Amino acid sequence: MRIEDVAAAPPSRPIAALSVLAGQGSDIDRLRAFWRRVERFTAGAQVRLDGPRGGRRRVIVVSGWACEMRILQDGRRQIFGFMLPGDVIDERSTWSIGSRGVVALTRLEVVDADPGASSDASVRENMAEALCEAAIEREERLYDHLMRMGRLSARERVVHLLLELCERVERVGLLKGDTFRIPLTQEVFADALGLSVVHINRTMKQLRQEGSVVFKAGSVTLRERQKLAAMSHYRPLGPELAGARDRSATERRSNGGLADWAVLA
Amino acid sequence: MRIEDVAAAPPSRPIAALSVLAGQGSDIDRLRAFWRRVERFTAGAQVRLDGPRGGRRRVIVVSGWACEMRILQDGRRQIFGFMLPGDVIDERSTWSIGSRGVVALTRLEVVDADPGASSDASVRENMAEALCEAAIEREERLYDHLMRMGRLSARERVVHLLLELCERVERVGLLKGDTFRIPLTQEVFADALGLSVVHINRTMKQLRQEGSVVFKAGSVTLRERQKLAAMSHYRPLGPELAGARDRSATERRSNGGLADWAVLA
DNA sequence: CGAGACTTTGACCGTAGTCAATTTATGTGG
DNA sequence: CCACATAAATTGACTACGGTCAAAGTCTCG
Image (cartoon, rainbow over all chains, first blue to last red; front, side, top):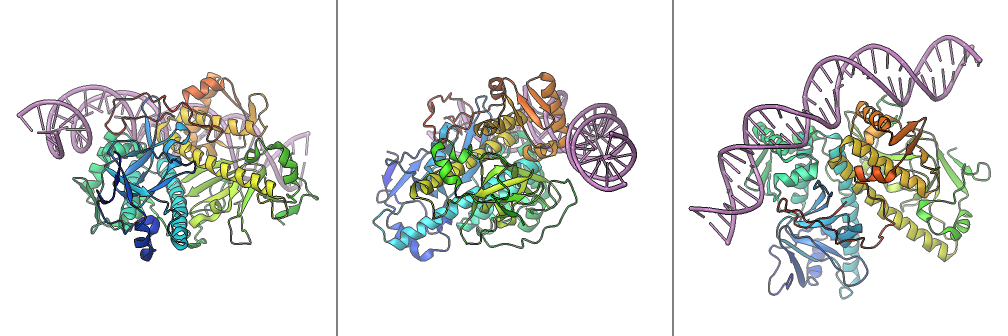
């Protein structure tokens, strides 16, 4: 009952803009032909991807948001990252050593990422490459998240995360002007950023008063993204491997012996 | 000048126990035959792996420790993880988008992870599989690290990290009794765990006084690892994919609507 | 309209950060 | 083998960011 035919219930929004397929416009129609089944999950449900076959199954989110998380026995929770439309969910994330899981944050629709043997080679190839890039970018985001939690203040963390989400939302065409819908409760923010709900609330209040960030009814508006990026040390998710971006901009700090060299953020 | 022949300068310790090759004892001798070159880096040097060919090059650490890190313009540093003997260093980590880098924490010796076409198929196959598992485990460690930084207290973080390192050291046969050499300054701990040096110092002092952890001259001794694991929520790095460890032990918390299900740590 | 989830606020606490000075290694050249 | 220079570890005093507890206030939706 979780699985329905597209015929009976077509994906709730056009799936033309999937980040894994960004820049391959012309192939999408061919790909779409193979997405006959949409799997749905309700908000709060655990996303289990029991690939019948042994190999690791992957799906693409068509609509809705999900997150990857872990819970400690005493109730402390940590959210590792979010999956939004256009992102890939890997079966491995779904039950890896029983230590992590994926949870739907809203109603969620996903389609199989494997075009199947039926499609022609070029399609399969493009998809494979897209999936690979998506995996790389996902890992890149893990590092960003680590930096956030380890070295940024509460304000910076919130802004940094919002900028990341905004950019990802924009990439799949869901950003309207400088506003986007964001289905995250403050509790979710807290669990993602390693802060308490109360402190998230106060931080957001402060940002709101400064006018740089506006929260209203499940939507966020980011004015002056440039300024926000600067104050939170945000660096756009490069088009992966965007080449050796000025790798020379290494302002050497005489600081601790450890790093005579420097890697900028 | 960074590259020398093994003949002229053999690896400083037997490379029989490499975590990437754990459990493949019999093949190691054959593999070793292809490691003719050892690359060396001095403590504090950035590890650059400029693979001549386009593909991403990978090397295995034979001796010494390194870490993967990022630095913000204002000097804040975040260490993402450590590489110790037996671990793989991926070229990608080395200059990815100019945002991360690998730094040697001690004198460091690495050998190429690619057996080359010269070796026979079974060797290449085993190595490929080992590299893949290593990559998976590395990612797993990133999640652990995220959990540490997001939800553990200073005490817990320190203990949790020490347990991870201890386990990894043990796996490659460098644990003597319950003691191992650890070339990390308190500053490095601080940068890895998102704490200040001063607070690391105080936390360690406390642990020392409690007698559960002993620091002395570049070595650490962990008594009662079981107890330490419990107090820091440490869960051993499973033999990856160790199967669906009691996946049923999901003590449901009635807590926030988000997670009616639970993933233990 | 009522129940439950989510947000907001106040009062107060405590973990961890900052600054600065001192002590203890670790080396290195003489 | 000693003296000096430097990196690393410690410690004290004080601050502040962020956590906890508890009580309202708001929204949503059946």
